[in-house]
Length: 424
Image (cartoon, rainbow, N blue to C red; front, side):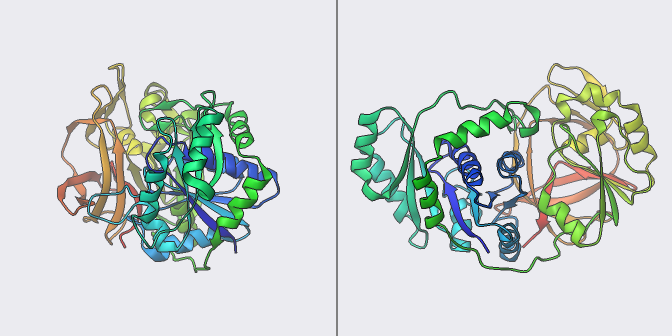
């Protein structure tokens, strides 16, 4: 079994993703069998991790998953690896209101040490007070080392090191050339740019010091073994899964759970006008960026015809749910006909953020019976809804009742929620 370490930061935007990617590739280049995980429901960062390591990256979510599932997923990553780096989400202690779910919660649950990445652009000796606060705020949490990021000069570095002493394990200069473009849901997806390889290589060059890499391994602690639970039951025993730039938000741990239940998965690309396997028991349209490809999807006649004719269960979430509707209006205001299988019209022209964890109770006809943990993150708005059965009742992370989510018409169903696991 491998050892593991959590890479966290005082706030979002501190550079922890770039540091994590650099460490993953630099360790791999030195022959370390390194794997990774991402705290929380993020779909985008894990694909960058996988590009850096060549291994699967799982989400570990202390709010959405029971402790047994979190431990089993970390143990699965640790098998055949020497080291697992777990990238945190937002600031170390940030999470859902009134509930467990922060990076600190995960580190405390698993007994893992934390490497704190601090953005030093606007401070000098005051960094000591910041690090002291983060190190002492929760006594059960161990901040094992500090990585200073975005340092301006030799003098700046000297001031920071004098203030922190031996807690500093590395100091990285500010490098404005290392930036990755973003869009409304986060970074541009890893697979969308031919520059990905050079970007990760450049990130690795910043942290390639052998002494630093050895220190990273020294700070990590062993991962406890844990048996894999069966996880969320599959939609069917054979499932056709949409997979391309428009439908890329499928959790690997969820697909792996379906395989453990004995389901066979096949994949197809709606953007390449491929229909789902007509012999499959079910079709899964995950989320992604259909709003960026609405015209191409509307013209994908083989895909749409295959979807409409499919005899099995058809399930879509978030972007996949939008494609099951009657129409999708893009950011320029152009309206595109979609599959017409559910009575809804959605629009990206009047953007509004919908964000947060959801606790779902499936209603009659839903593909699952037990309560679910899910996450909602989209900017599209609902223009209209017609007559159909609701799919879930919903509460937020604080337990507040929300309006019912999703629609179902016969075997076709979906919602804006990304299902993560059975509720712990």
